[in-house]
Amino acid sequence: MATTTVTQTPAAQAPATRAKRRWGATVVGVFILGVMLFPLYWMLNTALQPTSGLLEVSPVPHGVDLSGFTSAIREQGGHLLTSLAVAFGAVTICLAIAAPAAYGLAQFRLRGTRTIVFGTLITQMVPGIVIANALYSAYVDLGLVNSYFGLMLADASLGIPFAIVLMRSFMVAIPREVIEAAEVDGAGRLRTFVQVVLPMSRNSLITAGLFSFLYAWSDFMFALTLNTTDDVKPVTLGIYQYIGAHVGDWGSVMAASVLSAIPAAVLLVLAQKYIAAGITGGSVK
Amino acid sequence: MSTTTASATAPAADHPATTVKKPGPARARRRRRLSQWGFIAPAVIFMALFFGYPLVRNVLMSFQDYSPSTFFDGKAPFNGTDNWSKVFQDDLFGKALWHTVVFTIGSLIGQFGIGLALAVFFTKRFPLNGVLRSLILLPWLVPMVVSGIVWRRILDQDTGVLNSFLDTFGLGGATPWLTSPGMALFSVILVNIWIGIPFNMVILYGGLQEVPKELYEAASLDGASAWRTFRSITLPLLKPVITVVLVLGFMSTVKILDLILALTDGGPADSTQTLGTLTYQNSFVQLDFGAGAVVGNVLILISAVFAVFYLRANRSEGK
Image (cartoon, rainbow over all chains, first blue to last red; front, side, top):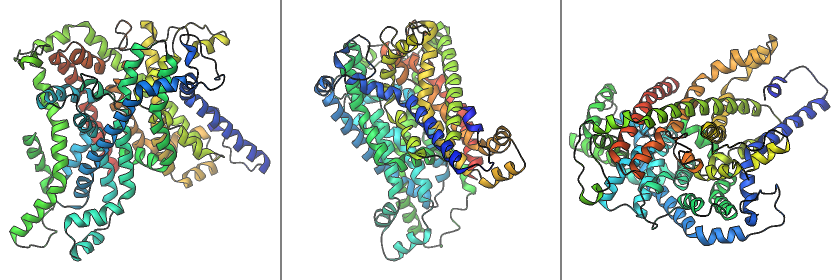
């Protein structure tokens, strides 16, 4: 790596060598990407060779064998749907709670809002297992163990602080005059929020929603700790238990893994700019 | 919770909150303020229940005697510092603490070093830069358990692709990556470095974009070497971003659970047991929530120290 970064001598060069050097960097970039994405390639490759069992896997699949996928869908399909339902539920809860709060913390001059913003930053640092530890006994008392709603609530907690911080930093930039103009026109506070603020904040809402979806979709810890039966089993938990039972059948385990990674791939393609904005915006600003 | 928020409000009182608004009738003002709080209250209540309550509850639980029967009869009598002394006297706690330290430092160095190198690399202009850069994010978006399981397959001693790859190059093909106590922690760190690279890269890349181009031009006019430029211009200007990246990396690494459970389940012979997995083991496998809470509290304490660093870094950067 070090050598490639040092080669930036600014001396005037023939355009041909410069162009060659640029493509040289592309080659290096493709190589880096290849190394970084190899595990994902291997996941797909193994998924397409379901009979491999405990044998070594060949570097390229010989023909496409989808039996790993059919058995993965048969056994994990329901868990994929559970994941979808829980993730969408968590996103809904997350945005419903975080968006108004972000607006309030950005635009209202209330006492204590600074403390709340501070608190929001701190909550992002509470270890999840600590939350699960306490939540479990509370959930037992409240009858929320093994329930969709309970898991949605817990998963929403993964996204809420992040969503508040992210949307707030966006909503601070909404000019006060715009909001005051709406209020002068006779719109109530709630109507101003729904009809003026939310549409203006669309990008940050999408980013926050996207990230809370990813958090909830990837959640394994709450799924593992807050469920004692098989009633509510997201695909992360499904795959984890799958390797315990089917350790010889890597083809279907990997097929299930591929299926569980699809939302990530789709989101990356559809929402690249939001993802980059979310990673930097939510943490640095 | 309510007491902590109330007392913490005090420092914010110097903020001139009331002077800005027109002095309308007191009742209208109060109604206005109430409706404003209506926007914020749900979030405050949610965070109090899902973050504040667990923090308080964990402290209480660490002084209570939980057993499997607690969940039937609801009895968890207070037992003083029994849980604490039990956990601290167990060798496993010391081991887990040590593994957590090694895991965290090792992961951070690897993630940050490679992430920074890649970030610098991608500041060069070359064809397909943007596409390659966004595709590198992909591993970061895959559920961590799934990444763990994929790597478990890759690192398998007999049938994993890494060993067969090394074998073709005659580099000793039978390394027990995950199955020998001496190797497992190292392997788990390697996988976690792989997971953390995209995140580090993206944030550092963003930081590098903020460094004014004129500084680089001036440096090259002065004939500064690439390394000198990097050390004297890039690094100092990047420092705030570096702090945030490292602290965030620390926070997500120190409490890790998913990855280790998927790769090794804490084994072999507890060689990859960390504070996170030990909390889980105590509470949800042994069903001794009191002991789990003790380890959890240690985790909280460590995190709290770094939370202070983070808030400092955040504040100095924000204003």
